[in-house]
Image (cartoon, rainbow, N blue to C red; front, side, top):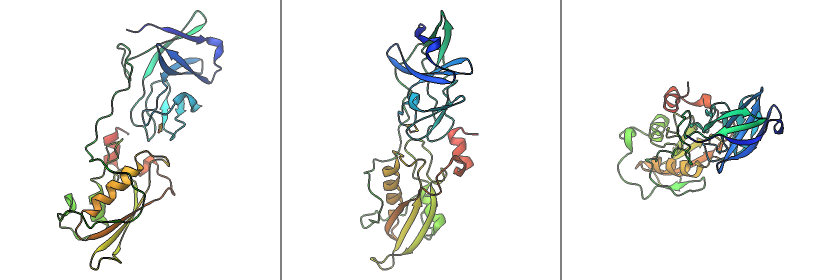
Length: 257
Ligand code: FES
C-alpha cells in the first residue's frame, strides 16, 4: 500500500478552497470543504480535463472543459458527459500538514496505480470526420440496414436505424441518449424516386469530441437504405441537451437512477 505524502500545510488552502498537488509523481486535486480534506485525480474521465481548474461548489467540482461534475468526496461522476468516476484518495491531517495516500482505482484501497481504468473499446467501425451537409448515398450497399429492413421510410424507421449508432464514449445509442431532435424526409431533387433525409441532432456538449464521428455514422447508417439518395445532418444546440432527454434504457445502461 502506498504511503501518505505530506502535500501542504493546513493553512495554505482556504475553506472552501482547492489546489493542485503532486503525490508520488501524480497530479491530484486537493479540496478543503467544511473543515474536511478531499483528494481526487486531476483528470476528468470524459476527456482528461484538469479538474483542479474547475469551479468548486460545496462538494462538487465542475470540469472546465465540458462541464461534467464530480463529487470531490468520492470521485463519483455526477453529470454527463462523464459517466465514470475519477479516483478518490485518502487524506489525513497531521503535524499541521495535509497528507494524501494514493488509491489504485475508484473506491478501492489497493496499491496505487498510475493510470485510470481503460475505456472499453467501441464496436463502431472507424469513421472519417466530416462536416455537416448532404452526403450522396450512391455507393451504399443494396441491403436495407438492421431492424429497419423492409420498413417503408418514415421517421420511426429512421429512428430505428439510428439506434445502431452509438456514442463512442458512452456506448449508448444516440436515439436513447436523446440526441435526435427531428427527422425530415423529402423527395430527392437529384435522384428521381429516392429520398432526401434531414436529421436534426444535438450533442451532449458544444465541444463534444465525438461529434464528427456521430455525424459520419449517422449519414452512413441511413445512407445504406437503397431508397435514400442523400442524408443531411444539422447540428442543433438550442435547446441544449440535458440528461433528462435520455430514455430509461439509456439511464439503465449508464447506471444513472
Ligand atoms: S473533459 Fe471533462 S467534461 Fe469533457
